Image (cartoon, rainbow, N blue to C red; front, side):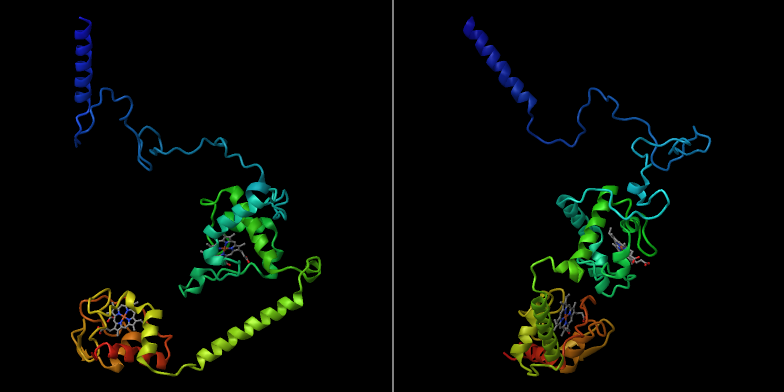
Amino acid sequence: MKLALKHISALLLISVMIISCRGQLSDKPPIRHHFNMNFQERFNAQQENPFFEDGMAMRMPVEGTIARGNLRHDVALFEGLDEGGNYISEIPFELTREFLNRGRERYDIFCQMCHGGTGDGRGIIMTGGYGYVPAPTFHSDISRGMPDGEIYSAIANGVRNMPAYATQIPVEDRWAIVAYVRALQRSQYVPAVEMERYDIDLAELGRIFTEEQARLEALAAARAAGAGEEVSAERGEALFVRNACQACHSLDGTPGVGPTVAGLYGSERNFTDGTSAIADEEYIIESIVEPGALIVQGYDNVMVPYAHLSESELQSLVEFIRSLSEE
Ligand code: HEC
Ligand code: HEC
């Protein structure tokens, strides 16, 4: 009797286990015993609601009331202004390392692409020739002389052509950014009297700077004078690699984003405008400096002009491409 009971309960347990996990997927919606309040009528944003006289489902706050947490009576904190309506000259937070680091992080996210990593106004979108209104440098007397509240206000309200960042950056972060802008300014501008307090040999630093500057100028001058007038397939190959031409042009005959350059030299090219030409030196050079002039059939006009290449560099590229057709 005892044994039979044990068997029955074991059997029951196994059958429940088998039934409960069917082990297969189903596209059907799950069975709901209770809908609870999962599905209810409601209004979408901007929808009409005939219940109210003005027909709007979205309600304005009742006049004279302020939503919880929105009481902004501290104008210094929220607007950067004192009672007289002037910009405050001190950040209303304690300047800890953590606060500054937060400011740096936020600055790098929200300001750096325009005002530059060091605050010199040469952020990446300003240097690409995209036509943005230039962002000013923070290393000017005007900017250094600005009260903290004015920088805060630029973030909170925008300034002339610069949009406001109030929706993206909360109040405390705005002040952290102000603190970091101040740190950037300090990093580039320490008055000489203050420098005396530090153990730094200014004359030595100045010498290193002048030397480095002279080295860079000499390098640029050498480049401008076309140092390395040599024309060779080897130089062309190096240029091909250095300019990442192979990202779009294969050397082994397979088409990529652009046509392969293997066998290109001397072959007939057909263009989207219905014309055709033989790929000689002149054609190849034009294809590099003005790729949009003739578009090879079957390809898109995606190659940027390589107008910075010197005459000898272009001829070297031609030599390299020609060498691929010689074997
Ligand atoms: C999209 C590019 C852009 C971004 C991003 C940007 N700024 Fe600006 N900022 C500008 C431009 C452009 C001006 C000049 C506006 C004018 O004079 O019309 C300016 C002006 C300012 C000024 C006023 C300077 C003066 O001399 O009047 C301050 C301060 C400033 N920005 C701070 C910031 C801070 C802090 C951030 C990050 C929260 C930021 N900006 C993000 C483009 C930008
Ligand atoms: C982003 C991809 C891309 C890069 C990088 C690129 N090209 Fe091109 N190139 C193309 C495309 C696409 C075409 C075909 C459309 C056209 O004619 O403009 C082309 C066409 C050419 C042609 C004419 C080819 C033919 O079949 O007639 C030459 C020559 C050429 N490129 C050389 C170069 C050289 C040299 C470089 C590096 C300095 C380079 N390209 C970099 C995409 C690229």
